[in-house]
Length: 281
Image (cartoon, rainbow, N blue to C red; front, side, top):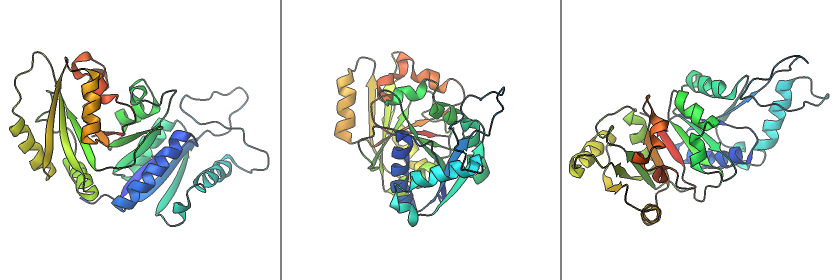
């Protein structure tokens, strides 16, 4: 499998600027085409309705069309990144709800991954699970989604953590070829991470390591297991000592995001600040 395209939705925010910077770094390493996507609203009658999830701006009279206005805004936005003069990218614009536009564009363009920023007061990944656009896209996207916190501290991708729960140790509900190719191209190491629950059977770490080493065609660096009694300090120390750059989760259709908020999965693992979050599908 060869990775060829990544989709980057933008809305002119600081979160989008961070996502663009991260995407430029990643595109160079993966040698893929970038597709910049932006959804906007068409002119609305005075008695019309603006749908949820659309971008609205006041369009000056000197622009003949909304499309030209937004295209000009995107050009100005991308001028902050001289790399776009040489990088391979395509711009796609559309009218309508952002979530639908992003997911449909990803499907139409057959992209390998969506990369998007998330923002908030604290710009924490926890807000990702609270009904944000990023969360909605991750539920409905036809491909993996990489969510970049606005306040990310490092652009390195050398150590990737794959979080597992007891329900998906040997359940492949994602396309392993994509993840395997990503690991190989980035020359990144992978560690398996698990939070055990009180009623859980003893884990055969060797069996789990061998299973994922085989399907991902790479060596598993380590298997880290936590339980409910472990303090937050231990989790933070784990990230620091192991230099985890990206946390990866395997999406499942039923109750995936809801489960992450339950005590059993220990949400501190997922919501550690400033880590990019990759949702595999």
